[in-house]
Length: 505
Ligand code: HEM
Image (cartoon, rainbow, N blue to C red; front, side, top):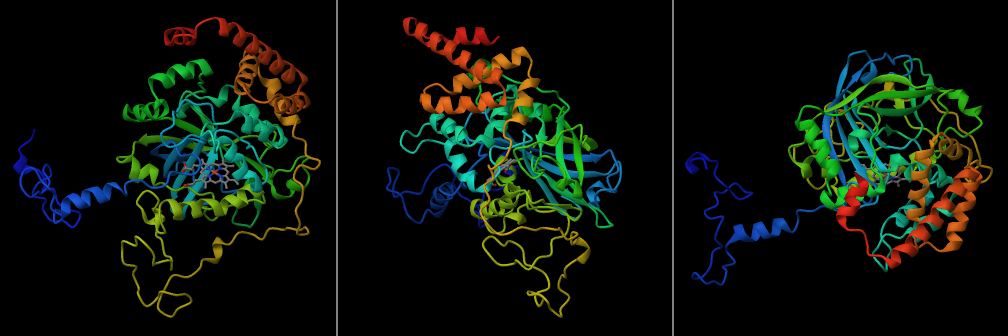
């Protein structure tokens, strides 16, 4: 232990030296306590306030800092300065997550992985709040809270409910594409380094001449894809609930941080009226043959945060954070997310969440939103506290205005399921699996359907069959095999941990 006289003095939060941090102040050695021992009261009171609400989804996560290096000139498509020249670098923060589990959930669970990136550009923060999947379970935001309920705990049992999940999915055929990915090998990655990331939605680029392009973002892992089988994951979780956090942290500490190649798919604005599918439908991918991947840059992670709570728990990503040259699209789910995230941040972190160091843009921020809890600096130019003003306050920037978007249509509730093909793309994905992948896929689905009422299983089978009859037949066979296995298990003892570990080797 170093010489205590050279160490900094421990103080209260008001800066006053703390006389004793080992013993409370009492009336005599046996107590009782004295209420004037403010340092003790502060310590206990502070502890009561050390948690903020966890994210309502994607609560368990890991994050790190890094940079984007541009490898391809994109100025033809976008005026965003982040892409203005080859070789340009921009600092960034990434956060990865599982979706359904709470903040203490195990990492190695079958689930979609969140893939959030905050680019600290010279024109403000640009966030991509994506997943490791190019599609999603829903195409209308009205269904998001219902869908999420099926992934969380049952109100009475407080357990996750496979019945709720398959009930919802079987009644929502637009989920099939994402369900196919979830139960494929990619549904259980070995760690965050081994996943792709996708913006998933269609966004837009616009250039200096006011041309708009629809764009999809793809981050391709440069570490390769690595997955656990269900059995392997059970062994991992038994030994380490933080396997993905550990893997990411250790790789960065060892100087071997992960990298992704950032690509875009670009669609000229008017093509959106010609494609056979709705290019703003979040349950669909754009065929790569029609809209090939164009490399844009390389993203790498190279620095772990110093303080998980301050920098990762409080990090606040929102699809509404865009910069000039990048825009949204009519995708209904994206449109709803433009509201949901900043609203969540104000509730979860606080009114001035964007002033926290991890969220603060690296560019200058000039806003008239000054008052509110936790305003911890004094805004400059006190006479210019409204707008317009005659006192030199910040003014709008017309060059940041995106080109007008042609829209049309009568206001109404349009059935998003009517006439939509929910089967071809999931079927095409299934047909790309080799035989071993298919067998694991069937077994994963059958395993997840254990205990689900037959009528729900049968309703889901119809969707599998419409996507591909081999898919339906495979799941039926896996269900029969699981039932036979259960019957024989009844007569024998359960597998020991060692047997499971052996099976997973
Ligand atoms: C987190 C809402 C769809 C990816 C969240 C949070 C909310 C939310 C409220 C917590 C935010 C926070 O507390 O910081 C919604 C709604 C959706 C939707 C209302 C649709 C209607 C999606 C989709 C994706 C996605 C389609 C991916 C393509 C994420 C990710 C996070 C997240 C990655 C974690 C962000 C982080 O790392 O902090 N979502 N979400 N969500 N969501 Fe969504």
